[in-house]
Amino acid sequence: MGAAIATRLAVHRPDLVRAPALVRPARIASAAPPNMQPNAEVGRLLAQMPADAARAAFRASPTYDHFAKTAPDNLASLLSFFERQPIATTAALLQAIAADGPGITEPDLAALTMPTLIIGTSHDAIHPLPMATRLAARIPGAKLLEATPKSIDKPGYPADLHTALAAFSEDI
Image (cartoon, rainbow, N blue to C red; front, side, top):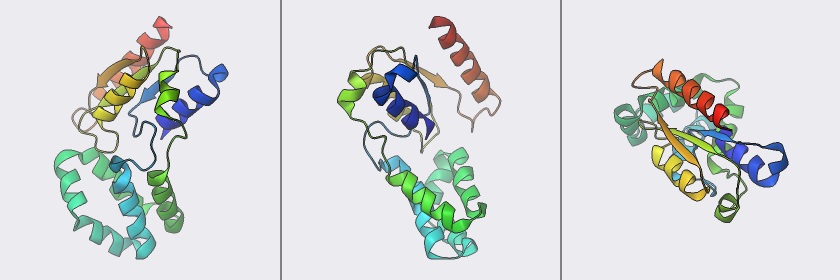
């Protein structure tokens, strides 16, 4: 959740931040946004049953079906958590991340005066493009760019990031 951490740092320690680049934000100012609930769901399953049973339960869930159709890259990430050791730590971490917030308010965002780049992508249910759009609307002068989704063009995504970050660096 690097964008949330960078935003918090920009708000609370602007002396350390010249121009944040917020890539695929998953939250704005509130804790536990709905888009983070799939992480919580996987965390709860891992906390309640052995990893193999948890994976099977997740594969039978509406969340799995939805992500298989709309966000295959997110689904691959979610499925990888069933293999991540230690399982108890993974379960706790996923639930904590899903419940957490950046510790800032929308007025804090409106008070930012530094150049800010926000990059979002479509086909990403955990880091939805509308979240990036809403965040950009709350930070005065923020520049919003849409990168190629990883699930559509895996090499295109990092190429877009590189181009956007290089241009932003030159502008500041």
